[in-house]
Amino acid sequence: MSQSHDDQEYGLDTLAVHAGQVRTQEGEMSEPIFASTSYVFASAAEAAARFSGEKPGNIYSRFTNPTVRVFEQRIAAMEGGERAVATGSGMAAILAAGLGLLKSGDHIVSGNGVFGSTAILFNNYFSKFGIETSYVPLTHIGAWRAAIRPTTRWLFLETPANPLTEVADISALAALAHEYGCLLVVDNTVCTSALQRPLELGADIVVTSATKYIDGQGRGLGGAVIGRETEVGGDVYGALRTAGPSMSPFHAWLFLKGLETLAVRMQAHSANALVLAQWLEKQDGVEEVYYPGLRSHPQHDLAKRQQRGFGGLLSFEVKGGREAAWRVIDQTRLISITANLGDTKSTITHPATTTHGRLTPEARAAAGIKDNLVRVAVGLENVEDLMADLARGLNGE
Image (tube, rainbow, N blue to C red):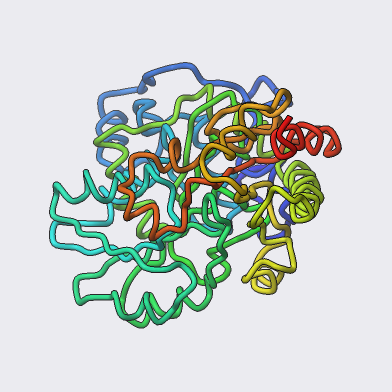
């Protein structure tokens, strides 16, 4: 699919394989890796025209690289955005968006259930530059409205939230944001474009960690900011060009390969996670299971309307507090004890002491993260093997 094609003609699965690719004179089937830091100009006049933006083309791989550009065009097409900017990690995506779109004196309203590092970025670093953040319960629209100030510029959320899988009503929050002249920024890492397209539901900006499901095999770090040309192609791109939280060409190539199989993997992750969540609900040692695919989930109906699948992330509370939660984790032999998610291999972690361990106890309590909570990112193994692996700790073996 060359750049002359209209991406709107194609379905998501086709975009995932073809969008953005323009073959070189070598006629390659797979996208090449352009491992070059800089590019040669035909003349001083051409160099000046490219640096000024008068003429498009490659300048320096911090902000113009052909492999990275294919990834940006492909993920923008898959998310339904006009423009994407690729970054060195998912957190770098949030940082680049903030650098480009926020200023001193601005205010963010964020859902409580954001990733721990996101909260630290807002609380400890954005605050140094005079950007304040307020946190509200993710699913309470009235609380969002009450928290908005004249200086509010972003409503920020993850949905489903990590680790409790709460689901926010993106359309309702988009309407609220636009009523007050704010941007709705949605972290779409858990679902990816294969299961959810926030821009179609009214969001202005999508941020995502390509490190997770987009790569899918735990090999590379990366992220992206997707949205309109005005915000993303202007201010966010300008911040990346200057500050340099850039994606490497090699990682862009890895993520291109990941995007090609993203849809089928996300359906498989979702299928495994649903079976495992239903099994966990029946276990005597489990107090509560959090997974949007369960009918017991408070936002199950919303997730069915808003998403094309329920994703691979679930969590559950174990009877017996932190000691019991750690026992479940430590008794696993197949599931890897790591805080990453989105891998073909299932992973398990204790959020209160890992992903959200840097938050204050009060902040963890507000987010609903208890000491007996265990998070599992369900991989692509045989789900019966995963059940057996968790059963050892749950049964006190």
